[in-house]
Image (cartoon, rainbow, N blue to C red; front, side, top):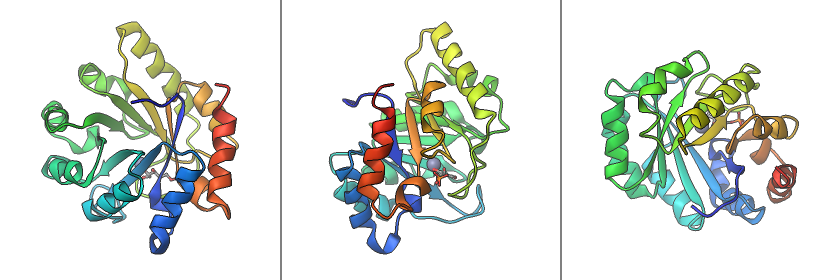
Length: 224
Ligand code: DX5
Ligand code: ZN
C-alpha cells in the first residue's frame, strides 16, 4: 500500500449509478486513492445496494485505486471469493454478522485480500479485542449502517481515540477507518482524532464538481 495517511475513500453508494464510470473517474482525477464499495443485502441492513458485478466494473474503471469492499450482509463468508475475484483489495465484515469471525477473517487473508472488521455504533470496542492481531483494518461505523447521507454520531470521536490507544498499547499496525456522515465540516476533526481512512459518500458525490470536491477534501487532510 503506497498512499500517505490519512486517505479519503469515496463511497460509490452515493454515486450516480447511471454514470458510475464518470463519477469514479472524476473522483480519481481529484486524487482519490481508495474506492469504498458498500454492499447491502436487505437483511443485515434495510437497503439492497449492489454486488460483485458492479464491484468488478468499478475496479476496472479505478484500476489504480485500492478497492475497499464493506460487506453489510448476512453470511459474508459465502461471498468472499466472489468479491476478491471482482477485484477487492480489502474486504471488511461486520462483527455483528459473523458467527465465526476469526475463520472468516482468515478466509479473506488466505484468498489474498486484506481483511477488516467493522463494528456498529452500539458495539463495544472490547468485543473485537480478541481478533485485533488478525486484522489489517478496523472500521468504526459513525452512522447506523444501511444508508448514505446520515449524520455523524459524535460519540465516534471518543471511540476513535480509545481504539488508537489500544492499537498503540498492543503495538499493532491495523488501519482505523471511519464511515458515515463524514463531510467537509468534520473531516479534519475525524482525522485528527485518529482516523487513517475516511469514507465519504454524499459529501463527495453530491457535489456539482466531484473532482474539485475531492481536491478540496484532500487539501483539508494534506497537513495532517
Ligand atoms: C453506510 C455506509 C457508508 C455510507 C457513507 O451504511 O457504510 O459507507 O455509504 O455515506 P455518507 O458519507 O453519505 O454518510
Ligand atoms: Zn461503508
